[in-house]
Amino acid sequence: MTAQPLNFYERADVALHDAQLKTALDRAMVRFMAQRSAAIDNLVNSDEVRDRARAARARALAKLDHYLEQLQTNVEAAGGHVHWAWDGADARRIILDLVKSRDVKSIVKGKSMASEEIHLNHALEEAGVRVVETDLGEYIIQLAGQTPSHILAPAVHWTKEQVAQLFQDKLGMEPSHEVTALTKAAREALRLEYLRADMGITGVNFGVAETGTIVLIENEGNGRLTSTAPRIHVALMGIERTVATMDDLLPLLQVLARSASGQKLSVYTNFVTGPGRADETDGPEEFHLVLLDNGRSRILGSEYVESLYCIRCGACLNVCPVYREIGGHAYGAVYPGPIGAVLTPNLDGLNDDNKWLPYASSLCGACQEACPVRIPLPDYLLKLRRDVVQQVGAPLGEQLGMKAWRIGMSARGLYKIGGKLSRVGLKMLARRGRIRHLPPPLDAWTSGRDFPPFANESFHERWAKRRKQMEL
Image (cartoon, rainbow, N blue to C red):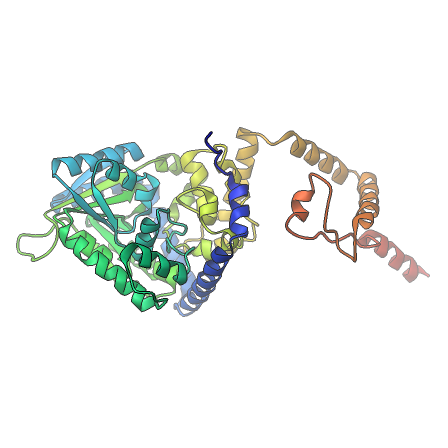
């Protein structure tokens, strides 16, 4: 009998008890947050730059149809080809058709969340094509047979000790926990892959409509090799990654690396305009841009449109107290963290699993504060909770509980009586000043933490006493 897949809360519970995951997240998140904070603080007029970056995203999405057509025109003028994919199935078909018609046997891939979104690797491998991820984090999780757990750092859930063991098992590396030794082993394994590959597939950070240029931002050089060494370059781009002009691109570049990794600028910022020219010594013979919708146009016409402003920096994940405890896989989706909790239900719908994602937040507001383009993520999470109730409904017990709470909070007498009864009941459950076990359904709280008993006197009671003493 096939085991039932775990739901969000079950996956989160597994993650909370994973000591190695906790170690890996603690190491990475503290570093990411410190580096981002220092980089933003050192950016002159950082608030103004963030405002300009936000305005650039708003400008592109306000006339997205126009800029997409302009992007297509300029890509084709530069010698490239543009393909339109309504959904993931369309995108897979387009790329598989290119693979078959060009007799492609081997593919190297740069980092691409869009390709994860449409399950591209699985489709290519089923077609008998060798696919090798070249981003170090992606390469690690490919060797491990996993999926990314972070937008910026796909293998953030792995410790260096785990990676060392993986490389010993898969690559025959000599035992070592040194980061330089690990990267050297990966580099040596990947070097020949670029030379033997027939096709390189990358994502796209931004597509500049004004020039037909795609921008690839990375730190390892693998994106540059993937897009230039093979004879065919295929770039997969979500339609929302369009920007109008090079001037609009500049503030986005200023905030992206700072928000993502604390750098002033990523090590490699690649500008690709069409295939290699006849007088150039490198560059692909063919360039294909696949423009992916896959639910984005539906979001464009909704109240959640600003979620498409996202530039995939991962800053909201790094500051989120929920993500920092459970990691990315607990979300069960390609895009984790606060932005994923908004995007996934909008892209895929509020199904049985996605309906829990808007609740994976403390609504502390740290995500909006960290977001370089100020997406109102807490507001969106609240609105999605409303949508869950309206579209899916709430459990009967929750409905009855909320109705009882509303009645109790609406009548002063009932509020006072409820407070007194709760104080007496909780005092009976307290042991040494703490409540370690509440009865169902409140036991969900005490299964993970203690509950404090109520004070002996409410604020209203204490205030009434104080007023009486003052009158005397």
